[in-house]
Amino acid sequence: MARSRRRAFPVTVTEEYVRIRPRLVRIAYAVLGSHADAEDVVSDCWPKLMAADASSPILDVEVWAVVAVSRAALDVLRSARVRRETYVGPWLPEPLVDSVDATSDRVTLDESVRFALLVVLEALSPAERTSWVLHDLFGVPFDEVARIVGRTPTSVRQLASRARRHVANGTSRFDVPADLHADAVRAFTRAAGTGVLADLLTTLDPDVVLISDGGGAVSAARRPVTGADHVARFLLGIAAKVGDSLRLHPCRVNGRDGLTLTVGDVLVGVVSFDVSASGRVNRIDMIRSPDKLALVDAAVWRE
Image (cartoon, rainbow, N blue to C red; front, side, top):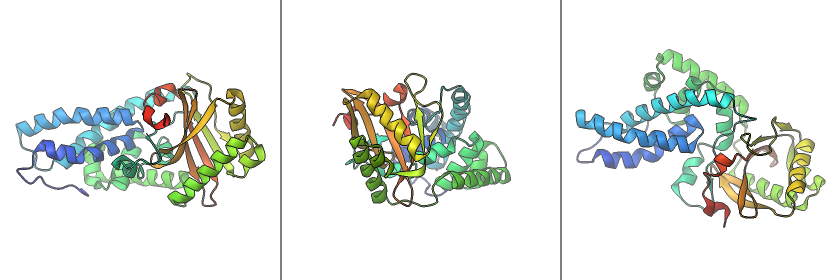
């Protein structure tokens, strides 16, 4: 497996677990789209790892833990997919929100699990998603992926291939530099602040899509809003309805510039952007579900 290494005694299982834990959380998060569930899966792995090592010393802790965490995440995903099918309106992944000047390791890790990618992965079957995430994103060999998914190596190659085509079709063909993305979000924020339709339209791609996740608990668009004019009018309508108390704050969403929305001392939204090669916003994901917003660190949006 890429990046794995055999444990060199006297390195302890605990030390190895601490070293690889961020990678395990990142794998589980990419499979599940929920950071809270990913943390739970990885935490549940710890006592199982200790019990297994006590029974028979584990030489390669990373390989053992990746297999255990991936299997558990796949099981959780299969159960979650049933719940998401009955979700009110669009279901969006749980965002990882940091301040714009955050220097933690998580910002670097989030770059490989961008929010737009997680949205695309939602359309895959659990087996396709797990196969693609493990092999293409984290470099796990197909033989290991087969053990995790419970298929043959040939089968998981086919699953990953189908997923790869879907990801290629669903994500931008251009890897937009972070500074271009940041410039586009700043331009959008300035234009939104004017409240002028023409200003906002200059920042949006003609084919922009807006998805809003309210979880059935707050007002949100039940279907995607498409086209620059419709999206701009939808956003300005929200601003007019809320009034002058609405505030937009810069933040990072999965490592890229985004916004938090507050009304008074209440967080009412997190916004993730995707930007085209022309420097215009071509996708807006607005998380308004109270359950998901409750997981955002208050220090980020109360700054």
